[in-house]
Length: 367
Ligand SMILES: Cc1cc2nc3c(=O)[nH]c(=O)nc-3n(C[C@H](O)[C@H](O)[C@H](O)COP(=O)(O)O)c2cc1C
Image 1 (cartoon, rainbow, N blue to C red):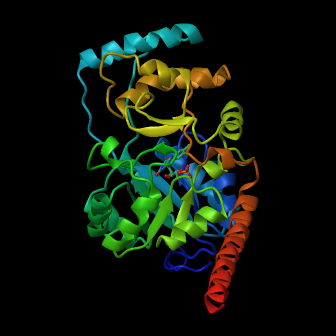
Image 2 (image 1 turned 90 degrees about the vertical axis):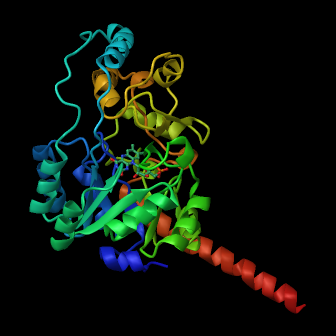
């Protein structure tokens, strides 16, 4: 069970990938701990400046000799009307007043330069490059492949997976509707692309010939065995690692992850203008009452940034984005190494249990 086609491609021991988690959650310690434990640690680099990205990669290299991945966001061109942006800015000023921060701040840029981020990854020869929110241009994918980097894309439907396969990626993350964080959807609407992994993985496996990585709500060895049974070659787990000691998540965020259950999350556009699953907050609930249109990602993301940051400073989870998947009740504050080891142990036990059922079934047929 350890070895799958993907563990061979990625040169890792166990078919467990720690999901990239941008936004301060991924620390070099967390990424390296998973790689050192035999999985693949990944750094969510989407929001990092090129300098921050280079520094984080070099810190990871100091901590592990094993392969690791770096993830970026494929850029999207969005130009919302000034009126829509002003209306949202006015609406958000209510939270700024509450938090005692300047009203209507000047927004300089909405996202980091993807080209510059890519160049850092190429210079640093990262072993694995993964991406979400679309497909980079063919020359970007080619450059990584020529550099000896394994390339992984993200799909939420079979059609997206087919396009990724044509683009030349080496493997695809099948992101189920259970998954925490932003949806990687890039073809249809977010609502049309909310497919659970039990349905998504086998259909994707049947329609593309490259390895599939199951992601969404997988928290332990049972989820790993189930995913491998559906035809996946590995799992990508995010929420499972959120509350551990190496995670850079804010303390109140970790507390919420440990306290909340499977019914506490919702897919929302409120924080960033892009569909993402997170623990319900007052901010998300308020935004249901907003009568205007929410500007698309990345505009809404920068419009709410100062509010999220001030809320974090004030230890107020209600205005923070608390991305998490539906496996919440199974979350622990164990170390990353323990989570990897336990997942493998539980998987072995789950396989044994299934074989026992087979033995019983066989013997009862004999009788
Ligand atoms: C806090 C958080 C941040 C995330 N950030 C990223 C990211 O930067 N890039 C990415 O491809 N996926 C990101 N994801 C999604 C994960 O890749 C993955 O699909 C998800 O964690 C799987 O579901 P789970 O959280 O239930 O394990 C994030 C998920 C979480 C929970």
